[in-house]
Image (tube, rainbow, N blue to C red; front, side, top):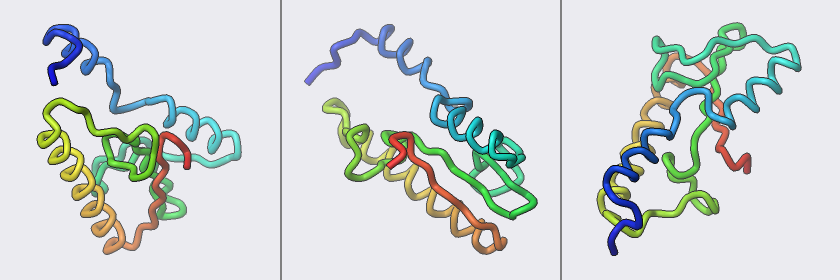
Length: 120
């Protein structure tokens, strides 16, 4: 099956997908800040570069997009019909990197929380 968009349109659409300050991130950040929690954003010194870091509690939060991180059973996780093998490999690699980051954080005695964009 061919893509419904030409290469230029698809490239433009993909360039608009954000990796920081996404809608779900902003929602979680506003909620936590309103409850009095203070945090650091995207700490590159920790494995996986967590979205929110609470040094006081030695806890991190990862806010994942359901599609990009393969959230099983979620309505937002649908493998595209074109280049299926490439997408499956890409999403599985993301899941593997997530798992490795969590293992490294546990070894450093950090707690973690995963939040998916569908909030389920």
